[in-house]
Image 1 (cartoon, rainbow, N blue to C red):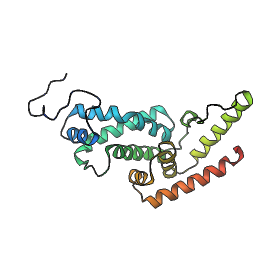
Image 2 (tube, helix red, strand yellow):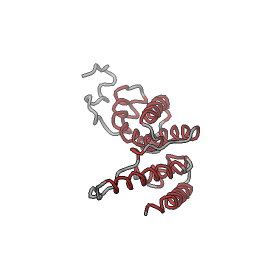
Image 3 (cartoon, rainbow, N blue to C red):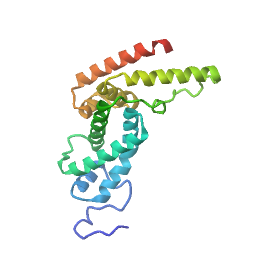
Image 4 (spheres, rainbow, N blue to C red):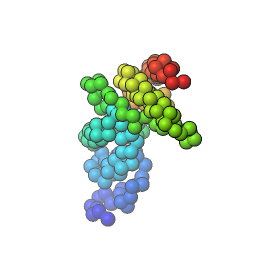
Length: 197
């Protein structure tokens, strides 16, 4: 167990990953509790890495973006007022960092960022494998053709299952704007994927 000074021992829970709700950990981290912040990092890293990977298409870039986002969050923790859940706040920081990167370069979406079909009983064989690979490549190209804002909204909604109001908070836009971006993204993807239906 880590040493504790007498003034904070009443607030500190035993050193466990489930050391309390996010809002309490964020308050403690904002007061300088390194362990509380470490728990938040361990708790939220997997979905944030998945988000960054879906947006950037590269695991190394995704790790860098998430690491930079956590550094930014650590510096800004005293500003965290709890208006949104800590998770939503971190999604916003990671998404904004990824959008900056996406706007600076053309994103090559890695094929391994596109989820596998939910149905495990897909017909096998070389022809089906080739067709599936070509369709996945076409989807990756279609996603790459979306604007960064449309791409981010699509990933947050379709791959991470977030609600429109949550996405609006994350991307800093109105819910109506998010719905418009998603409509345009879906229309573009439907058009570009038409040959694969």
